[in-house]
Length: 441
Image 1 (cartoon, one colour):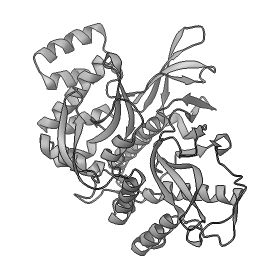
Image 2: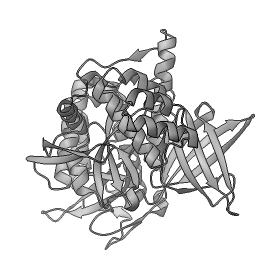
Image 3: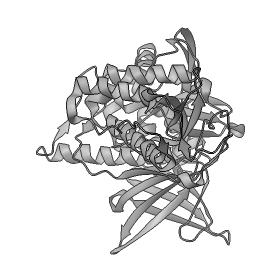
């Protein structure tokens, strides 16, 4: 499926020779990922094509005349589509030419040089592991380092991931985003404008039954045990009074196996809970706490009259969804580094022969979208196991720990930037891009 790359804005910048060039601000999952020129992307595309041939998506052509505003917007849209579609091929996603280019862009954008450093990785119980890294190490590489440090079985790495998390007062926690394998956690942490932002290690699957695959590894079992305790303490998972009493006894006895067996019976066990947000269901202006997992989008909705209503949307009735950027104010020095204050996720839901769009206004729209994609992928992998005639590619050992569905699957997700609502303060009229160097055309 497509990745959450977007280019909501481009800016003109003066060069040293008196001309101008266009700088694109590329966001990943709502956070500024890099800034890049067309010429850099054009050279990268040529490198990719030398390796992978014509299986790549189309790249926007050069213009040899001055671009109008509509032409510039069209190019920005095309570049955005290109970045979203290129990683859909798992062979491209895992390639050095793909990863190395994006690593360099991240470092250059935030003026960070490659050097040795230390990074704290937080576990679900609040403890942290300090690991020695290079600032240019990817999330996939750091996850391997952490797993080696704690003794996590290498073949189980695909069930875990690094996340950008935010710690709040009263011991509350928000998961901001899942880090992409090619993302540089050190750079993302240093460049984040979010207070009390940390890198956390969490399990990354939405089907609680997958716990069983990890229990033969002591470290993996301990990690999901610690996360289960955390989820219950933070009321993401909601045991009944009787269940809570039994779980407390098992925790005191440190009986991890029985604790996890009972936990799987707890309401919302293994779900990802988002921060409170606004939704338009069953009527506009409702507050909602959204939990997603086990093929469900579960919502505790507070109506305008302060009554609460529990609503569950089944994933097999979700036809598609899209994330929309509603716009924000940008300044001359460059765009804000997060878009997540003005996002919505809407999905098309079909029930009783009737379709309707359900909308959530949440800063975690991209995280929610990633969770929906994960549930779709897990369901397709399960179906492929039950039906061997379905085509599914499993990456080579050591390349990537995740399974990849072939590209003939349905595309459930789209990203729609509403550029008309973006305000860019510029010193001069940008109806036409006048003096632009040929290499950026």
